[in-house]
Length: 274
Image 1 (cartoon, one colour):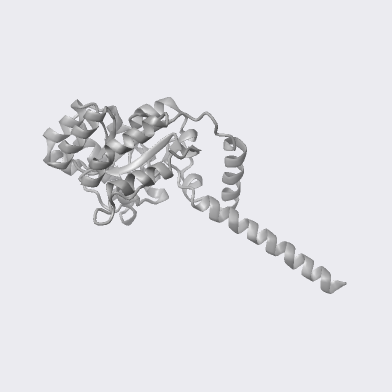
Image 2: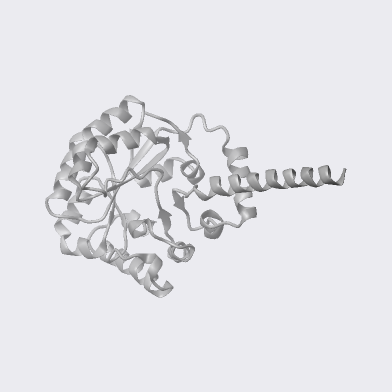
């Protein structure tokens, strides 16, 4: 009798452990698309096991039904501005009537002020991508703060876009909870993404690859990570625009997206294949 009881207890413990592992594995993959200044950065980015369970229950309880989430897609372009590629990208976006958000590097914007001004003049939104594009997870808190502040100062001296002071994206998507807390202390929403189609892999990714990836992982609403200085990214835009518009999506800037929907809708979007 004791033998069977021990086996039963062992099976129950194994089941509980397996369930806990599935919860951890599921929630560990949930990178938020953004972290606002008022959010708990620790809970959002690196929660405890209890936090993982709370996140899962919150997701299922509050966000279980996501029907009706607005079909808004924000194309965000990191890096630059760059000669040749930035004008080509702006030409393509203007022709397709797609507003977009550009996370610019302060140093590069200073080097190409006329391109920075053209982004603003074309209706593009400009946000902060630090001053020199370092790996922020390797820097001290003071250095992180300086990168963000200097990036903001450089961009504010060139254009007058409110998004410069509101939205920040860490270079290479590399961050720690401390980096995000520093951004929060400066009033920034740290913006990541709902989808990274990997256009930065320029040697292997084709325009067709990018479009196929974005269509496969489309959500509503959707923040897509793209990069300036990539020819394949420019070439894929007409196909991407046609696919999403035929599926009922509307292209907006990041700022317009943030004003249109609660941040929770962005962090917990509806899955919507195109």
